[in-house]
Length: 80
Image 1 (tube, rainbow, N blue to C red):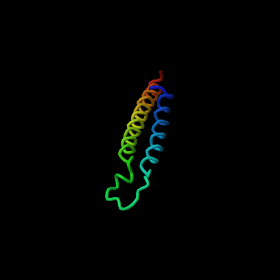
Image 2: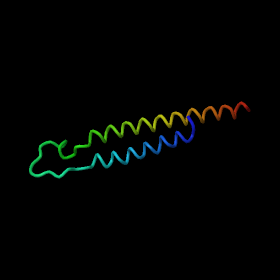
Image 3: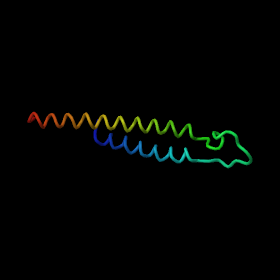
Image 4: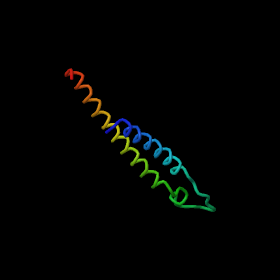
């Protein structure tokens, strides 16, 4: 994977983390006693899935970078 693609994946992961932080903490206005927290925080499930997807993007970019840096180091060591 190219360096630009890895950076784009990392930027997308950071954006997803920011959006998920907002969605996780978003609280609706509720009158009276509400027994279920899921009604007060309706987007927590979506936020957790965005965090999972952002983590997947971050791991993909990290693995790609590690593979690319290993091949560059091995080419340097061999004198190519």
